[in-house]
Image (cartoon, rainbow, N blue to C red; front, side, top):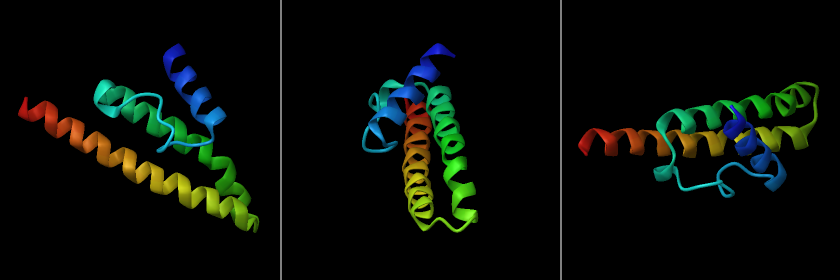
Length: 86
């Protein structure tokens, strides 16, 4: 739990999800990768609410968060496949 909070804090401070990863996805457990995705998407909820109220800049941040989530999901898929083939 503390490690997840630190990962989320570092992500929020650095301002990014995909390009500012704390560590290489291959070094993280699949559980930690999925939890990070959940934390990052939860953080995007505030911008989603702002977008729904008409804030176009928030919509841009939501689209970026979704693109980052897509990349993170692909990293999870690759790691699971690598674990399967190992």
